[in-house]
Amino acid sequence: MTWQLVLAGFLIGTLVGLTGMGGGSLMTPILVIIFGFKPTVAIGTDIAHGALFKTVGAIRHRQLGNVQARLSGWMFLGSAR
Image (tube, rainbow, N blue to C red; front, side):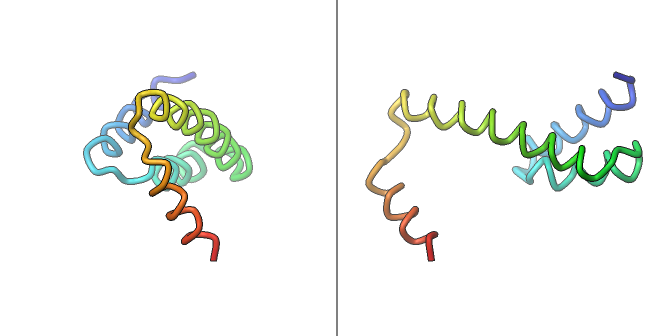
């Protein structure tokens, strides 16, 4: 790992934290254009990261009682159009 990748990750993480913008939409093009990663590798790592961390986050929010199951069900039905 090079210091440039660490710096890019820090800057993108800060920007995502401040704006709420999706990190994959920012980091994937940087990995491909600036650092020369293959697009399949950049996209694949973003998908793997999202699947792991979003699953853990969802489970934890459910444990803490932050999830309104009835509302989530209605949102799920509304999105399955």
